[in-house]
Amino acid sequence: MAFPRRPSAFLRYLVPAALILCVFYVLTGQPGSDFASPQNLRRPWAGLGTQKHPIEYLIADGEREFASKISRQSQTIAEAAAAYRERRGRHPPPGFDKWFQFAREKDAVIVEDFWDQIYHDLEPFWALEAQRIRKDAWDFEMRIEVRDGKASSGSDWFWTKIWLKMIGTVEGLLPDMDIALNAMDEPRLVVPWEEIDELVSRAGREKKMVRAEEAVTEFERLMKPGEGPEKDFQTPKKVWEGNKHYWLIARRGCPPTSLARQSPVITDFNRTPLIKSSFALPHMTEGYVSNYTLSTDFCHQSDLQALEGVFVEPLSVSATKTLFPMFGGSKLAVNNEILLPAPMYWNEEERFMGSQGADIPWEEKEDAVIWRGVATGGKNKEDNWRSFQRHRFVAMNNGSKITLAEQKQLEPVNFALPPKAYGLKAQKRGKLGEWVSKWSNVQFIDLMCGIKGQGVRCNYTDEHFEIAKGMPMAEQFRNKYLPDIDGNSFSGRYLGFLRSTSLPIKATLWREWHDSRLVAWKHFVPMDSRFGDWYGIMEYFLGDGTEGGAKGRDEQARKIAMEGKEWAERVLRKEDMQVYVLRLLLEYARVSDPRRGEMGWVGDLLGDVGEQEEEGTKGRDNELVKEEEEAAVGSAAGEA
Picture 1 (cartoon, rainbow, N blue to C red):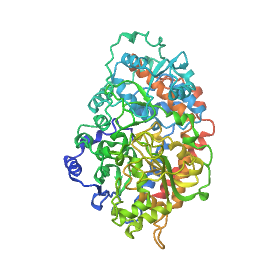
Picture 2 (picture 1 turned 90 degrees about the vertical axis):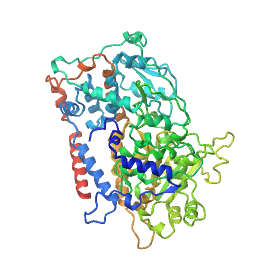
Picture 3 (picture 1 turned 60 degrees about the vertical axis):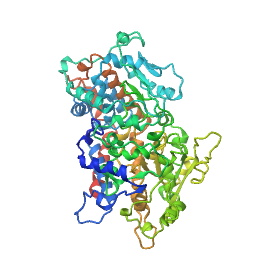
Picture 4 (picture 1 turned 30 degrees about the vertical axis):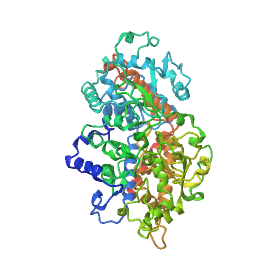
């Protein structure tokens, strides 16, 4: 499936009734949850004559998706170029032959889908003047410059230095360019949806493939920043907004007919948040995430404005409506940054990756969940902390709080009990809190108080949360289940979790460079950002804890964990980041060139690929590819 032109564009077709219904819920709903009431669940497998758990179907779907994806690998440059033209509608950029050779040398898996994010990020820029793109890039205060095969930067910001090291590993293969960088945790570009839609439409109308004999196959050399012919080009003025209520900024990136644009704006966060299943229906089936990409798009989920700290009050805000080529490590679905691999992934810091323990055998691990973290997500304060996602997740794993809520002794202040539609055995017996306490070890190590002088404690959240000591990643890896919850932006621990022998359970709204390489329910377990499916996921893998009751699926959990680790070690290496960055920057250099419409690599069409074709059929990769395809197809057939 091609990467959507605009992830949320489908929402313009939502029927008005759905919009009216959801707005009505926001206006009239009471604190609590109706998550996944039976009549609200989609059941595409109904009538199949089977009593399998919904997650089993999702796992089988993941197997089939992965098998289909890797079956499209390119072994020769001619195959790679043909796949490019079919998927992108253009010739590959100049330097594509060198990129392919580099990718082969790095033993990279070459599947055209793996670079979808690049084209999603760059497509609007094809409708902007190349001179504007170039000037906006060198005119930005924090940037990396590439001239004559050498990358440099005048900034000593630690993220810039890490990105410079990463780009420096491929600098000899790069044309001249300037790369503007976002040094903040939070993304900064939110161009109105209407403008992006028009730019993408215009870029599509102007897309073409020139005759091979007429293609421009070389990049031009650039003068120093500020000295080129674009210096006199008048670029649009950038107005930087600092509105701490980021929802008001973010939602302009959604379609005008979307719930995010149409629903009332919530301004009172000093209460128990409202959690409604109706907003999750487009990306869930039988109460579980069935469309992971869509689950990370908040445009159809207007209730998340009161369930995610980034929308309530980020630590910092500096956003603009003006499109310009800024690169960053992560973004929300509506942001317009161009994604690079995040600095902490390239740097492989121990606090994110863990230097030991990642290879502990599954059988030696505890049948338990572990999470330690800081109460980030934005600037939590006395009147808004109830709307922060990490606070909600930690509270949902407090057995004592759950028990009090079950017994009607104390209403939850920032979460809701799981919907009865999940049919949790422990909940039916009134023992949900007791059951959760048996396997969950989820605690804060710092409450990140909005009041100075509190240390790791916080006077307005102390009564709700205990503080635990920090736990090294090596010790966390002794547990089988690793939930990954967003902080101020994406979680830097995700790659470390994927490379471990534990099972990552991922809830996020953030997009990263590697998303199209991973398949939900095959390499990791996806979770809705409301966490209403959390208990159902854990019951599936651990069992219901009752004598003679439903047994867990430990072997299924182990399988996903091991396959995720194996695949991460195959396609999420530093070498894969290099291959991604090289291809991204070749594309960026082309879209920044006034001759871009005529530019392309056409060596395969002119018969100039003999040596590389021969190299492309050699080496261990042929056998590995065959083994991977056979294993994936066989596994999918077995699950079906």
